[in-house]
Picture 1 (cartoon, helix red, strand yellow):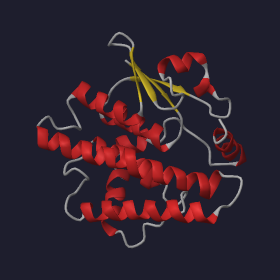
Picture 2 (cartoon, helix red, strand yellow):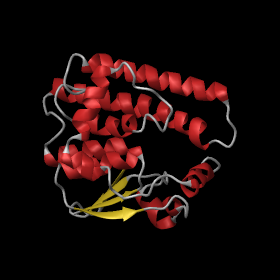
Picture 3 (tube, one colour):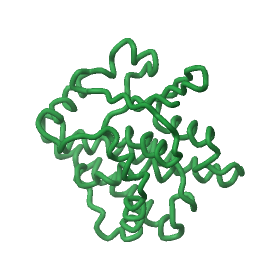
Picture 4 (cartoon, helix red, strand yellow):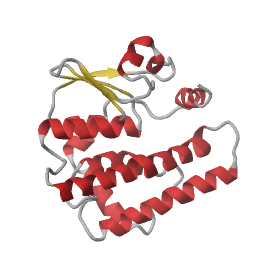
Length: 220
């Protein structure tokens, strides 16, 4: 049994989608950012960085894993799925996973901050991060013109990237003209496991309380 500690964010959805795709039994622990539950001493024992998602593998001596990319690799290796075992195939998946972890996530995350959450509208940072996110989308679009999925076959690289591209409107980033990327998004949206994972945990439509919680995290 896996204990999943998460919230309704793109990084959180990576873990829930993977668990659904791999059909692993898990127990959900939804954390509230507004109540800063990710900063409690109990959770910091699981993830000393105080961020979601994190998992605890109860069947492996309560082994804790934090950082969304590390969680995806752990679950893929645990099951022998979504990550090839041959060196070339494995490297291709990890390259695109690192592309998301080091590029799409940080850049689009900053686009979210300055476009949606920051108390002041600073047009310079907004433009900078939206442009860079769009550039990364264009990299993916070119790749997806060559292959059905980012690393060829469906993998944890796609699972890591989809929840971010899914919220491109929230980040103020257009996918117009990126037909290969749009095709890929539609393909992932049609997967039942992805649909289930995106509902974990369930959340209401974004409102002022959610925005205030996000803004409070900027000064922690």
